[in-house]
Length: 98
Image 1 (cartoon, helix red, strand yellow):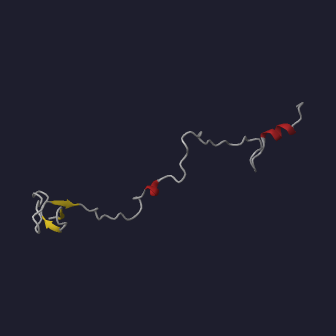
Image 2: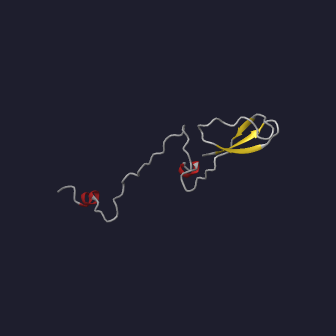
Image 3: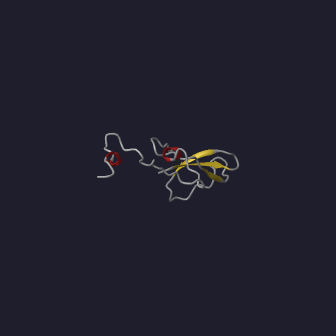
């Protein structure tokens, strides 16, 4: 059964009560018989490892929405690759009259 903390609104006395979630909450202080309220605390959860933070999966440099998309252009193949025979060179070496 869970442990709940209550605080008296009149004498500020704090006390713990163990009861199920289905049971009715305690409504009176055991010291002064005044009204009480339930005290809430942050959950004691610790997330360890990667994937729990925004920076783990975020892009390092986000692209602006209004900038044009970056495209790659390849240079024209004016010169033949090294080691490859040039088709133009053989045609230029042959005499034009034959």
